[in-house]
Image 1 (cartoon, helix red, strand yellow):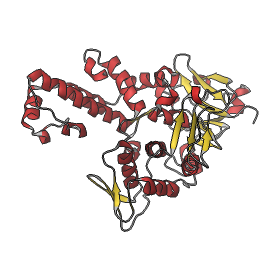
Image 2: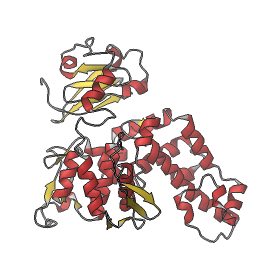
Image 3: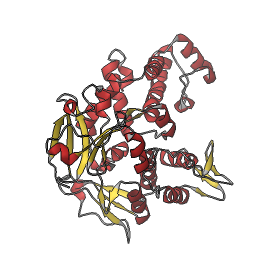
Image 4: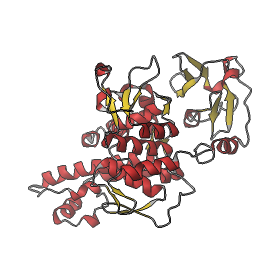
Length: 387
């Protein structure tokens, strides 16, 4: 390559440029609409730019790709290929957004099955612990189990589905479970070098030089799975791991991703390109009617279309306004679920196909932070939605 390895690419809407960031902390910017095939594209279509390997920039919807080296030499009118690009790229990546080799599937299934409470013989119990619930959901999505109210039961004839769950969601499920079982420990930056390893054989994980300090120690069975999922290269976190780790947001690292330009741009995108169906759901959740209050007080939760898993947590209502406040609290969980199911920072609002592949990673710190920002911007007259 005639340039350092790229670590990220983004569209700077304000400047109208595509910005490539390299691993040596340098960057390169090119006016987006000066590129052949992008002049009449929408802002959303341009923002869908991604890296294809380490040498190309790629727009799937527009079926346009450019050699990064060509762009850096000022060749803005020479796309690599145009018609059929999406199909060719999917074949290169193995289709459905997954790499050609899905080597992670077997190790992930084994990791979840071994580290959940229970076993393949007796089934798995989640004990209503977030990490265990998500791990059970992942086993179900990978065709290994059927869901039950308190966990998952193994299938007699397990079969990996043709369409896999999203790899980023699976990675979050692995991190949640590893942290819950203390197979990975995130280290505060001011304590690095003073902490003792978890035990013999644990590996030290860190950021590449110059990218701050995201340190951890992890069991080798965890690190091997994280490498297959693309979160680690050797013992260094990859660029792709950063926004995935935001979703767990370890308190030890004290990372405030809400100030990051990617988060701020994603807020703009989520507000400007919110689907009508999502907007209708939000407006339904925001409105608490007298009928809703009566339904809650009588315990007839089946009539409440806005009821969520959280609605099983009830307190004896003492007054009309207390019930309204309780329903506002419940509906915030439902509002969060819209982001758990239908939004990801790299893609914005998901297509129907991608939403069907998504795991519901509840207590996702990134999704909750996005919900708060979107609510504050679009519904300032309903401050309870942003709490």
